[in-house]
Amino acid sequence: MEEKIGVLLLNLGGPERLKDVQPFLYNLFADPDIIRLPGLFKLLQRPLAKLISVLRAPKSKEGYAAIGGGSPLRKITGEQANALRMALKAMNVNVSVYVGMRYWYPFTEEAIEQIKLDRIKKLVVLPLYPQFSISTTGSSIRVLQHIFREDVYLSRLPVSAILSWYQRQGYICSMADLIKEELERFEKARRG
Image 1 (cartoon, rainbow, N blue to C red):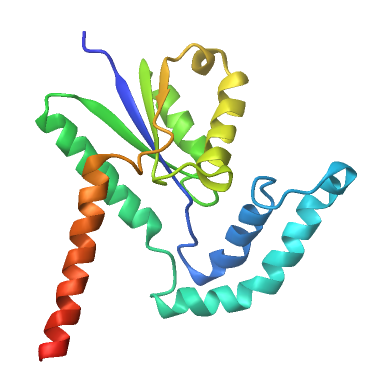
Image 2 (image 1 turned 135 degrees about the vertical axis):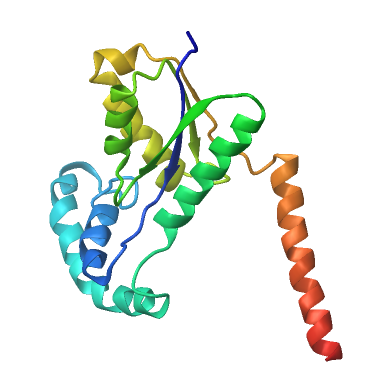
């Protein structure tokens, strides 16, 4: 029987509709890895997150309205998950790929529940942030560690996490190619 392998892609998440902006911002600012409050001030984390999210929502809604009314991150991450699954399948590696967002749907917790239902036997975790930062990869991994500590099945699951990949040659070449394309556009615009 083939071993069930899972790949969990982690990302920030984003509001899909304008009405999601304020609750998304609340989730973001309620994270102690985003706003670090010392000692007893930690008790103010959620009220402060509520205040900031309410105050910032109108301006943030303008930004999201300008790009179509919501964040494209869920769609893009879903497309990346499918492309990764297909690329691994082409290498004869059969995996299930899951998407977990830190601050909006599908939340990491939801992806983990599906991983459990699918009875995955090995899991590779890939945060989609190239370099490690406490407020991105760190926060996402912290949530996973908490979930895994509290669950008997998950605590025994072999897990490998790719915490950063900014130094990978393929990534660097891809960025260089993108920059070269943009520089060529400048040159064409200057000539044309």
